[in-house]
Structures are given as C-alpha cells and as structure tokens.
Image (tube, rainbow, N blue to C red; front, side):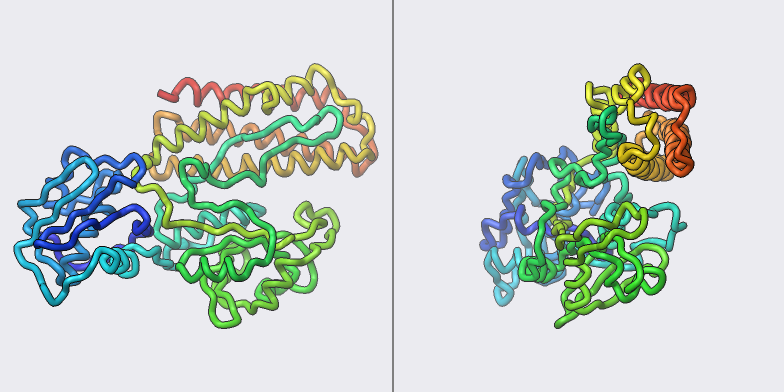
Length: 449
C-alpha cells in the first residue's frame, strides 16, 4: 500500500486542474476533465496499486500523490482494491474515515497545493559551476535553465528552443541578420511557463508572483550589481539576466548562477531598481551595452509545466521547426545563397556601418550555434532521440560555427586595417557555410522518422 508523503520534490502545482467534487460517504470523487489532453492510461489502476510513477504521462502527479496525501493527512485509509477509474475521473472509496478530519473540497485542494505540489526551490539542483565559456553571453537562457533545474525539472535545456532560427534582415543592404536571439526561450504554445516580456518596475506584480513561490526573470545592468565586483560593479556597463527567488522585507533573494560569482544571496530594492532602470551606457564595443535596460522582466510559471508532454516529441518538433525556418525564402540558406550570387556592395567599404552590423550579426549567430552545440551535448548525454544522430548534428554545427567565426574574424580584420575582404575569400567562406548548413538540414530530415 502507498504510505507517507513523497520524499522527492515535485515541481508542479496542480490546483488549477484538479477538481475534488465530493468528499463524503467515504468516497473521494476527483474530476480531471479540465486537464488538457489528459486521459487515464489503460494500466492506471495497476499503477496506482503498485505506486508505479514511470511513463511520464502525469498519472503519478495527478492521482498517486493525491491518494498519498490523503493517507499522510489521516483523512482516509483508501480501499485501493475498489478504486474506480474513468477516462477523466477517479473514485477513491475508503475503508476507514475520520469524521473529525472531515474537510471540504477547497480545503483539500489547498493542502494538496501547499504541502505537496508547490514548486520547491533547491539550490543543490543547480549543478556544478561550469566552464565559463560554456554559457558566456547566454545569461538569459542560462537563467531559465538553472531556474528549471533548481525546481526539479530534469534536462531543462532540452525543453528550450534551440536551432538556427535565422532570417535575412536585408543583409545585402544593411549587413544585418535577424538571429532571433531575443526570441522566446521556450515554445510557449507547448510549454507555457514563460510569461510575456514586460517593461516596468511593477514591484507589486513581481512581489505577488514571488509570494506564490514562483520565480521572476529580470534584466539588469551589471554596473549596479554590488556582488559583481571587478571588473563590473561601478566600472563596466552591460545587460545581464538574473532570477528573483524571494522577497525578504526590503531585500530580494537573487540567483545569478554565472561566472565568476555564482551568486545566491540578497540585494536591496534600491540596488536592484538602479540596475533595472539603468541607461546602460555604451561600453567600448560591448554589444550588450549602449541601450537602456527598461526594467524588462518575465514571470516564470513553473506550475504550468506540462506533465504529459513527451520530451522526445518536443525535441523532434523543435528541430523540424528550425529546419523549416532555414529553408524558407527568407531563411539562412537563402541568405547565404543570395550573398554568394550577389556580393553586397558594402563589402568594398570596410569603414562603413554595414561592416559593424555584419560583425555584430555574426557574433549573435555564433551564440545561437554555441547554444545548439550544448543542446546536442545534452541530447547525447541522456540518450534522447538517438535516431536524429545528435553526435553528427553537433559536429555539423561545429563546422558551421568554425566557418562563421572565420568570416567574422575576416570582417574585424578588414575593418581594423581599413582593407576590404577579397571577394574570393568571401565566396569561399560562404560556400563552406552553405554546404555545412545543407548537410545539417539533410541529417534532420533524413532521420526524422
């Protein structure tokens, strides 16, 4: 028989989905009809009896813990042999009922949420301090990764958007490529855990969210963050992303799992407000300075993480969407093909703004490739979607990145020496990139089934 409270923190809150319709006559009736696409699996009865949580379809979270909680709170001793299951409901008859413990359905939901399924922050889940180069300049995605991980979600990287979602932004005329670097970090249609990015201090909204034990992603200027020390604090500007974990009187508990500090501690409201409203003055050639922070923030709803979404299906969907984007008329393959057949006029003018635009665009392109390499490392490490050949895809991504880095270096050198890149070098590097991109797409399309 199932006994006691679960020892493993479950990073989900289900009170918005589970409806306890009846708590009398020694019967608990639970209605699951509002759970999106939730259908009890054929072996549900056997799994409840044995306490089997495998399968990833949410049965353990929605049903098993409900029964477990009832037992632990001494409300009922269920007669497990007589449990009745329907497609969207469960009857739990009791062989023993505690009249002095009678509660109504709202109280039961409250206990279920408060005691069992509220997201639990655990810094030990954040993982080891990584090599700085691994997530350098990827602070927002790293913040979301660490947040999901500290709240118990496994393999968080694989639940995030990854791929070459690159578009032509009139590269021929302006030197700009739309790398979608600031796009949503997750597919909010499938994984609705990340709120809309908003502008404003909105402390009342943020505090109310933190009160629910749910974190908030905020943008700051490192110049105003006291724990950053040298070379940043009161010395160097730059946009950065951190996580607010908790409100403590006039201070906020902050998680900034990023080189070199890996900070987890308190910062005052005044310091945080200065960092969130900074003008973020231009700092030499730093691409993350020179624009105001504008107090951007995003509420993170870990309680909305879908329990019945298969990670393999999500990975495959993500990669196929990326390939579709690449082969569109405005996608990255067309971009480089057009630049091969019609060399941009600004390539002859190394002092032009277009050179600077191209250097910055290829820098952000490089970051997309860098994250994608880490993504494939994770796939290979946990043996997800091995049929998609993550090792081969990672190698192809490294080939693309190597060519992009060479091209960016040539642009930097040309600008520094005021000497235009020779058209032959331009064509040669773009040809290499095009070939690698095509082979990358071919691997995914060939192995998608």
